[in-house]
Structure formats: structure tokens, C-alpha cells
Image (cartoon, rainbow over all chains, first blue to last red; front, side, top):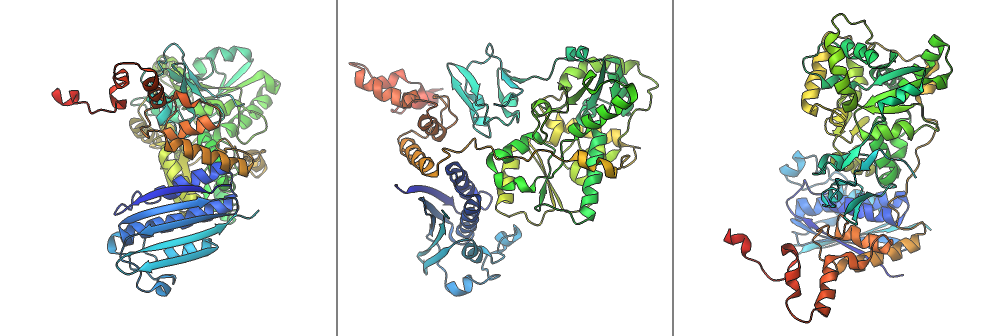
Length: 141
Length: 439
């Protein structure tokens, strides 16, 4: 079976629109009849990733690959990169600015949530170049 | 297949495609110059009724002649009815007028709302049960939307039936005791603000069997009420509900009637979908109760109302002046009556295939086809978007040749002379057209 590939551009600087990709992906996954719990976990990861890309990196792109065994979400941006990934993975740590905090973001739960709801999380980052966060969610048979 | 109250007037529909994009569940297609509604996708939200420029999509309540089928008839006015009249300061005038147009008794849905709110308060006192936040079960369109698109949230929906359903059960029980008639000789009819409740009257979401005999549209009753209302100077005291019950006509009312907890109140179908997405991802966990209405301003925005929802809201507020806060307490023995006797079940209307492998294969075909469509979402094929069209083709509801761009490709191959582009309407032509700027 070929892998289904979905691509969602994420606009930078637009916190109001953030969450759009997650909601579109969710509808497609529902049409495929994936288990509810898998859909929920994928959509939480996507949502957190979207918010991160909007707040920290002026947007980016999310690609989703679905096959019978797993969902792989890859979120790529060309932002400033993460200086200390270990620190960024800690709950409560955030470098979000005042505009994002005003809206209730910046609780430092983005990456920790993605780790918690995925089966595998991988962060690739280069200072000044950008970041790619990949999450894998296995589909129980 | 379920019966909907949203219907198409074939004579009026010109197949203009205005409606197809407004539908939140993509339930409308245009075929043979007429809109058709995919019955298993329609949630009776009434968006298409508001949008249709030819007034060809309508919703019909029951005909008032139905009253003649019964020896004794009870009107169950929804509180939204009270908001339709200018400068009215007494609900009793409406209730008395209902008795003059063919009903033998009036039983307010607002009273049932107060009973349900009292039950909710008692449940809260005992810590509540079920998944949190709890979602209101008052709007049948929202219930169908959740069953279709948000099955994971079914556990969050309050366990109670619609206020008009509770009103019907209690009103019939009382009338049997008072008149000695058999229950089936008694006609119980709600007077409702929207198409969704007409559908719900005969096809309940949470009850095995319907408890109403029908539902009349507020706008059909409204004109009949005006003249008897003028003649009523000293109305009999029939009103049984207080501020909390009447307040449920508008969004926010049900949350207010709970007298506590953190409530979120959402109105308008696209806002409802947005909040359901958030709830599904656990992004609104701090709320205790979420009130969701398909219509703007809640039931006052339903397509059967006469008055615009904002003015109606003001009129409802005027009517509340001087009323007690609440006049109804839920009795221990009636608690069971208030609960659904049928579980809300997942409606797989969006599912591409029961078999996941098949569904994935279809999804691949849909994407492959969509990649070769123009992405204009012009609606010429009768589907709301290129994606929906690709889905229709793969699901066997349309054929690839229905796309005007595919038609052009065909024309180009058979046209011996002339520019096939010129046969197409301006938005679809390849070459630039500067007539717009020439004014």
C-alpha cells in the first residue's frame, strides 16, 4: 500500500489561524476510519507544532504521512533554531514573547506535549537555519 | 434513512450553487440544475435556508390541520416564541392566545428547561458524572454533528433529553390524568424556532420512540396569534416558568441556569465546529459546561423565527422583568424521565470505507484526482470544492467529466477551428481578459 501524504503550509505571525492544519488533518484521518485515540494524539501533536512554528519561526510546513501502521508528522520551519533542545523539552520552559503569552500560549508545554502524545519524537535543529520536529504515532492493529 | 424537514422547492431552485459552499457538512450537490441534499449528511442546521437567494430551500413544520386528528391538543411553546412580539410585557398574553387558536392546553418548554436545569444543579452538587467538560444536549443539530464528525465527544454530551421532549412527556401524562383520555387521543405539538426541532420531533436523537405528535414552525403560528393577542386584556395566569427557563431561548441561558461552574457558550455553526475541535483535542479542559447552538444567538436565531435574533433577545429580557428566578424543582421520581433511553451512536457518514485499507486506497485516488483539478472551487460540477468533487468521483457520486476543465480538455481535442477558450465563461479562460478594466 502506498503511503498517503498530506501537506499543510503554516502561515507565520497568525496565531488566530493556528490550528487550521490540525483540524484539516483530523477530518481526513476520520474519513480513513483510524482509531479515535490515534487521531486525537496526532492532532494534539500537530496543533502544538503549528503553534510553535507560528510563535517561534514565522511559520513553516507540516507534512503528514499515513500508512496502515503509523502516522508520521514532520514539521519544518526556517526559524532561529533551538539553542538547547534538552531545556526546550522541559515542561514549563518557554521563550514565547508577550503577544503569544497574552493569548494564553507560552506555557512551555509544546514539545513536552508532543513527546507525551507521540510514540517517538525527533528534533533536528540548526541555529539560524531552522528546525524540523518529527513525531511518529503507531496505529495499533 | 432519516427524514429531514429541510426540503427543496424544485420550481424555485435554479441550480445556482450558492448553497453548496455554505453547508458545514458538505451535504448538498447540484444535479440537473437542482440542488439535492445528501440525507445521511444533513444535520438540519438551516444554513442553506438562510443563504438561498431564490428561497428555494425551505423547511416545513407540520400543518396546523393536524390538530383535528386529536380529541385534545397541547401546545408546547419554545421560549424563543416569546421573543417575537414587540412591546409585550406578559407571557400570559401569548399563552392565552394559544388557547384561542385551537389548543386545549399550554405547557411551556421553558418549564421543562427549568426542571432540567434543576437536575443539572443536583448532579453538580454530587460532583457530577460523565466526561468533563459536559456538552449541552439541547440543540439537536449539534447532537447530529457530534455523532457524525466528533464521535470521541459523545461521552461528553449531557445525558438528558431535549427540553421539548421532557415537556411532551410530562404534558401528556398530566393531560391523561386530567381528561381521562387515552394517551394516543392527545395531540402534543411543540412550537419550534428551527427545522432541526421539526426533524427531532419525529426522529428523536436520544429516545427510542418519538414523544411528540409533531412540531409547528413559530412563523406559522405567529400571524395567527397576533389578532387574538390584541383582544386579551385580562389574561388568565398560565405562565409557569421564571427567568432561568425563559432565558434558555438565547445562547448563554442554559449555562446561567446551572448557577455555577465555568460555562462556555457558543453560537453559530462554524464557531461550534471550532470549539468541538478544541474540545476534542482537550484544549478546553478548564470548562465545566459547554453550551453549543447551531444558530446565531441560540434558538432565537433559528430559521423559523420572525424577529431578528438581536431584537428578540432584547424582547426576551423585557419579558423577564418582575418574574421569579425559577419556578420549578425537579422531583426525585421524575429524574429518570429526563434521561435518554437510547445511546447517541456514531454516524459514519464521512467514512470513505468501513475497511481501513480500502479507505486509504480511496484517499490516495482522491488526492491523485484532486491534484489534477484547478482548485478554483467554482462549483460548476455541483460539488462545494475540488476536493469534495474528487471524493464524489471516487465514491461513485459523480464522474470526472463533470468538471468544466475536463470538458475544456475534451473540447480542445475535438475543436477543428476557433479558440475553445472562448466557449468558456470568463473565470475559466486561460488567457488574460482585460474587459474588467475597460469599465
